[in-house]
Length: 182
Image (cartoon, rainbow, N blue to C red):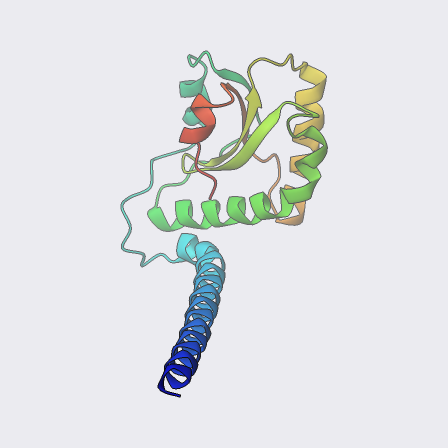
């Protein structure tokens, strides 16, 4: 009789422990999702917040593309980076670029590796969108123009004309690990 109660007690203890673990995992999962939602929703407002206490943004502008011409990994630059003089102006610009980056999403899928040469694309804090292309694949000027037109069309929807985009070549494993998507 005592042995039966002990087994029942252990069984109930294990059941309670399993229920607690499931509850903890559910709460942690919901908390993580909520945190991600808050973070992604706050990203654009962070760019647009002129009172942001973040480190100063780089002094990007039309000269940025000139500086990139000496980089052997840059295949092409398209569009223009406007000149901005204040942190608030640069933050607002990055907010618009971020909006465009989010709009591009699935439109770049046909160009994505392994079907295409695109390894990834993202916002660069030097004032442009960067598209990383796998360096082992040949990419023609017409393919770059086609991708740029897709991006520029979405940018027009975010009130950006002649969006600045840098097309760079990358080593699939080495450089992709360094690239940060915002």
